Image (tube, rainbow, N blue to C red; front, top):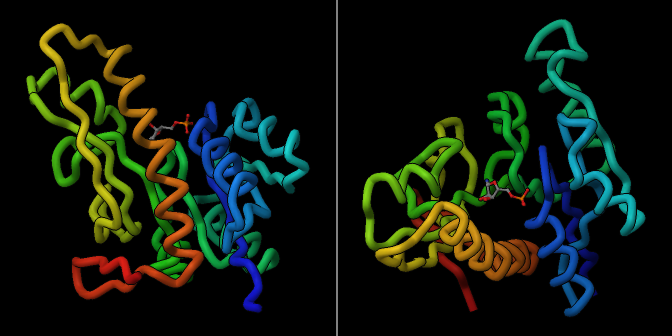
Length: 204
Ligand code: GRF
C-alpha cells in the first residue's frame, strides 16, 4: 500500500475550506492527510480549527523577517522539514514568492471564487456580481508565478439570480467551494492529475 500524501494547508482567515477538506478526509478513505496548517495571521480562525483536529500549526509573517526572500526561504524550509507533497492554498491572502513556487512547482493548488480567467484577484465574488454576470462559479487551479493564472483543475458554475446580494452569492459560492476543493485534493493525492501544457487531465 502506498503511503498517504502529506498536505500543508495555507490559510489567512476563517478556514471554512480547510474544514471542508478535513471533514471530507474523516468521512472517506483519503489518499492524503493534512499534517500542517500554516498562516501568516496569528488571529486566523483556521489555526483554531487545526488545533482542534490536533494538526500541527505554524504562523509567521513577512514582517517577522528582514525581507520577503527570507520569509519565502522559511516557508520552503518548513515544507521540506515536514516532507510535504501538496500545498493547498485556502484563503491565503499573500502571493506566494517565486522561490516557493519554483521549489514546489505543480504541487501547489489554489481555489478562486470566480470562473477564471475572469475576475482574478481578491474580490472575485463582488467583482463578478457588480459586473452583472448571470453565471459565475469556482475554480481550482495549480499555482504558477502569475496571479490566479495556473492550469485549471476543476471549475463549477453558480447561477446569479436577479435579486442576488453579495451575501447570498457568497453563500452559494462557498457551498460549491466546499464540495469541489476536497475532490481536487483527493485527485491530486490519488495521482490522478496530469498536467499537459495549460490543460489538466483527470485520469480515472
Ligand atoms: C474562499 O472564498 C476562497 O475562494 C478564497 O478565499 C476564501 C477563503 O475562505 N481564495 P475560507 O477561509 O476557506 O472560509
